[in-house]
Length: 228
Image (cartoon, rainbow, N blue to C red):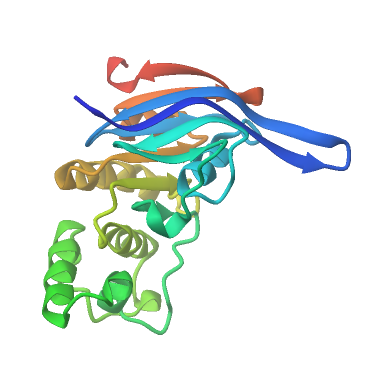
């Protein structure tokens, strides 16, 4: 299969009072179209920095990030986030409390005709198992249901790549375990290419097709999670 996401020789650093601090050095990652990759590692190993660089929130000092045939970032190129066709789910679901589940899902589709918005919303709420919950507000939904609404909203604009930053960290263990499987199946059903950041090994192995184990200073070892 063709690699949808390619990261080669990526180096990221931050300015500190003591001078530049390297967060990620000579990092490599390739993710096949329609597959899920996981970046697994402890806090401070650079996994969230990689995610932010893919999304366009951080410039790169060296290396290249490409999505399909489009170079998103290099030492000379930096496409703004809104031009990358990259969606993102954060630890906090970020649902608008004054909007219903359906209104949250279509929030990023306001340029489409109303009928197209409704059709896409209905499709996604059915995909995440919430076809009858569109009229409910976030406070009327469980944590797991809110997470699925957030996933539907992230998928609504049909991103070429979806980034998930510790998306289950605010859930209890039982709900997290169940949703890990559910979200994996939803993403595979949608044919969505995705990158998950987590520090839970079981979560990474359950959800991802490929797992990269990251250590401080961004050393990484690719592992086929299906081999476990």
